[in-house]
Image (cartoon, rainbow, N blue to C red; front, side, top):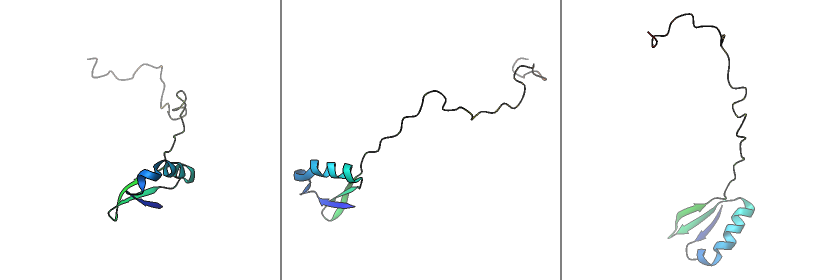
Length: 76
């Protein structure tokens, strides 16, 4: 993990961002000897298809068309 102090940061910021993106390694910014912030490269999430995401995840446990054998409590 690369480290840099806050005094060196303004002069090299754009170069450091490009380096973090290229190498995919985080950058730690040090202030008064303590880690202040860690800069991680951005990750892109693969887009999921809108339709068909739940395909194959359901299960039919009985007859969907036959009438209900017992009356529902709500309908009484």
